[in-house]
Image (cartoon, rainbow, N blue to C red; front, side, top):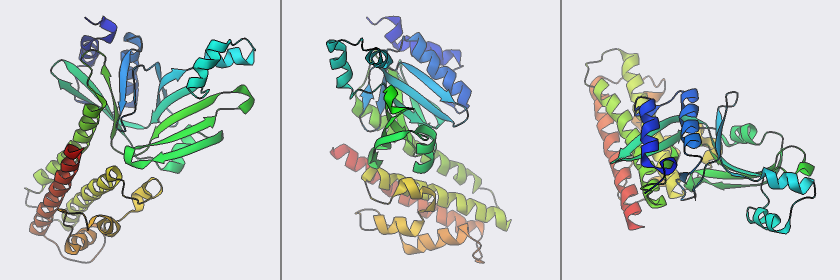
Length: 335
């Protein structure tokens, strides 16, 4: 029997306090929900990352309204640091501190687009979807002018690892940060009671990123049922379909580890480049004609398109996205 602080009921009670939303996108509400869970659980919750990195304790959450960055801390060794500066730290404490590489703080940082709540029986998962932030912008927001020790990009695992000195190096504030700057569901929190493994957490994060694609496609499909005659509106629908396709292809390249320098180039990678990266993968067919149509619908091409043309384009894109999703799940099931 779990104490209330570690129970599934605590998560459900807090969710109910906020009227059981499916999603929350307001930053202050996001902060309040996360803070409520951390404080009322006495920080005994589980944080799982897409990469299988996981932590069985989250000490606190911080939100910077200026940068839009949330930080979830799982390590706080400031007491060791202060004792070291006063020359009062003992050998055992130094040994414990050494195990974390003499870090003062470790946290995950992300610009949260929204929380997604997934309830399976009585177990509530709280998923976090990140906003796209360039690598340069993320480093500026998280590291600032501090001295960098090292940066490791783990793109296919949806994070970069920053280690840096915060402030004057002589003050020994060493920080390790798992930074997330790609626009997918990257991590979740869950109660200790009924805890599932990191593999299941990764499957949930992947599932809901793909569901997000389905939801966006469905929204366009509903709009395309109308008999639209206005040229600008027709081209607008075509451009939206193209954007969804690009998002899907980029996500596929990222999780498959296909190199394309996405941290620096995310908004500048076009369909032609994505097609070259993917065209030789079995069971995924990206015709050049589809790329041409997407380009013509997204630019002032001078081409004439009617609503039937866009509906046909939509059907072709839906089929291509199905091929991509089938490939993803086949590879996941083979692991």
